[in-house]
View 1 (tube, rainbow, N blue to C red):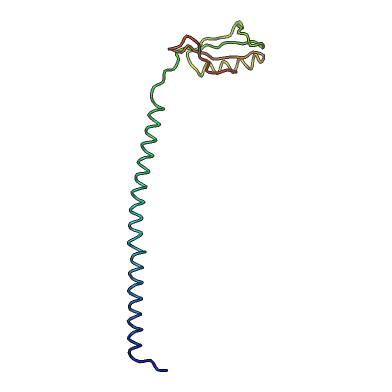
View 2 (view 1 turned 90 degrees about the vertical axis):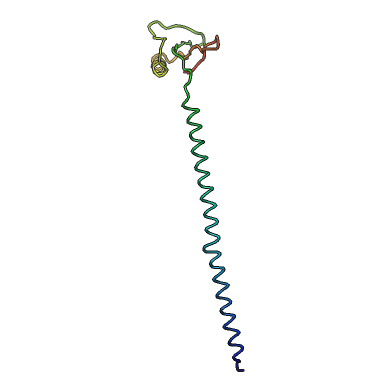
Length: 134
């Protein structure tokens, strides 16, 4: 079976059509769609980073605002039955939270049968506020 020149022309035209369609598909999938998708994700990424920056700044602002900290701390001693008591020679008034906590830990080591509470007067209440208890 011999092929005619018309069959050859048809096969060449079909080949050109395949090449042109594949070129169009290649252009769409290699340039057009990725550029649109990357542009979208660049904008979404920039928005996400901007939102995270504002969230960090807002939380930092809330944390960094001045707090009303007490000016004076008192250590209260409790005996084994839970009654408030005093031990002679112990320092009980402090101006600094960390110093009061350090002294409380030392007192607990020296007097293991006693419990200690670090308290302070809150400005708006008539009761003392317990900060630490060991």
